[in-house]
Image (cartoon, rainbow, N blue to C red):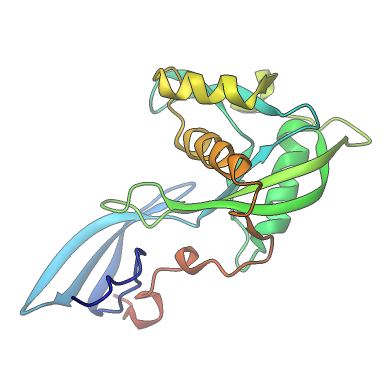
Amino acid sequence: MTDAAPLQDDAVTVEVTETQTVFEGRVWNLRRDAFTYGEGSIVREYVDHSGAVAVLALDEEGRVLLIRQYRHPVGFREWEIPAGLLDVPGEDPLEAAKRELAEEADLTAERWDVLSDFFTSPGGSDEAIRIYLARGLAATPEAFARTDEEADIEVRWVALDDVVDAVLARKLQNPSLVIAALAAAAGRSREWTTLGAADAPWPGRSRPVGADRPQG
């Protein structure tokens, strides 16, 4: 018996024979691709997303910074961690994370590490999110002026164990928060040996077929 292959996701490059933007939205688009896979051709539609970052800010007392805001598609004011889009072409994800922590929580951090990477809905979107662990926190010189759904953000500091308990009790549903809390609890139990460097490569940020897409 041979050793099992490493347990990991593998990027695959396929031939995209046709691609078009079916709908262009304010934040993201809907794209239709035709591509060759196996012996045939397949057509799939998906949300063409810029990608995003999220931040689990952990203070010296082991508390996580949570924010609550209204999310219209689901009709909930849900607890989250600071997060935001990579809305500038070529934007460095770490710099985006620092911006979001400042804008949504009025905080800076001395230490940054990669906590987790994930795809939000790989069957229908190419959105990839990188979650950072931020420590050595300090307040920004000035509070950020927030608008729209962010205007009434509620902030709460919660012990990491209490966040995990709420996740396991199915009381929290935001995917970035759920993944971040569980990854942080597991990482802490392993003395943070699971963390990645803040500038670690991010294979999931760009779809492997991107360079091969014909325009149409």
